[in-house]
Every structure is written in C-alpha cells, then in structure tokens.
Length: 193
Ligand SMILES: C[S@@+](CC[C@H](N)C(=O)[O-])C[C@H]1O[C@@H](n2cnc3c(N)ncnc32)[C@H](O)[C@@H]1O
View (cartoon, rainbow, N blue to C red):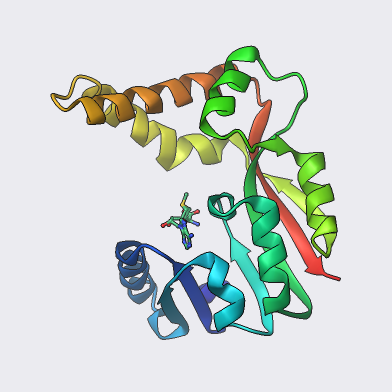
C-alpha cells in the first residue's frame, strides 16, 4: 500500500524471511515489486543499516523490542524532521473489565494507556502529531472472522500445543467481544524533534 500510495522506494524490514517472500509476491502482483527492497534483519539494527529515513512505518511490531525502546533506537536513523507512524496495542480506558486486564497482564504485561505511550514517545525525542484508533471492523474483517472458525476446529486437535494455541485465540476473541472497546490498536503519528 505504501509503495502504491507514495511512489517511492520502500525498504521493508522483518526478521522472518517467509514473510518477506510473501511481501515480494504481493508487491509483484500489485505492480510495485521494483519499488520494494526487502531486508531480513532485526528491527533494533535499523540505525546500523539506514540513515536519513523520511518515514518509518511500523504496524503491530514495535512491541517485539518494546514500544519506547523501539522509538528511542529508531530516532537516530531518521532524517531531521523525519516521521514515524507506529501502531501499538493500548488501553483506551482506565476502567477495562477485570477479565481483559487479567488476560493482557499475562499476555502483554507492558501494555499501557495511550496517554502513557504519548508521553514515552515525547521522551524519546518526538513531536506528537496525532493518533488514530483502529476501528472495530479492522479486528473483525479478514481477522477474527477468519481466526475464530479455524481456532474452533483446531481446539480439538490431537496435538496439545495446537489445542492450547487455538484455545488462547478463542479466549482472546471472547475478551475482545466483552471488553467494550476498552483497548485497541492505536497509531501514533510522530515527527523527530
Ligand atoms: C504482528 S506482526 C505485524 C506484521 C505487519 N506489520 C502487519 O501489520 O501485518 C509482527 C512482525 O514483526 C516481525 N518481527 C518480530 N520481531 C522482530 C524483530 N526483532 N526484528 C524484525 N522483525 C521482527 C515478525 O516476523 C512479524 O512479521
């Protein structure tokens, strides 16, 4: 989408080569393959490989090295005034149901309120230009509506590891349905200050 919308070279970073292969196939299908350069590498090594980045775009991935740590590490790789668009799972309310709080305390103990993430981004040297909450439909369409029937089937799989993963997925979907929008994926639009 970025290659199509921006018409510039995009350097795509992921540490899992098969995902970059899938990206390559999709980019070729979309007619933008020549604009994608894929790099199988650690996201924390971005400053060692790139400098003067105009726009660093990261959806649902920064948490792998910690939201605040990722922002601090990436800052020197951006050109002065360069932009970061990063999304991160966050609490949208201080009054989330106990079941949701318990679920994420176990699964993602580092999850913070959006207001805390804004403060962390500012402390990491960015100006906050805005936020955008992913709409409910983005969790359902092509995601939970696909995952739920698959997980239901796999919940009785002969392999205990598969059963556990399927049950965890079903639990996550149940939590989402009962959490009343108290958490979500938030995009932070940042400019290096
Ligand atoms: C939840 S997925 C999000 C992928 C994509 N941005 C999206 O929205 O569909 C997280 C991605 O981060 C990659 N990843 C995890 N740890 C990484 C690391 N340390 N360095 C680079 N990529 C990493 C995973 O391989 C995976 O593709």
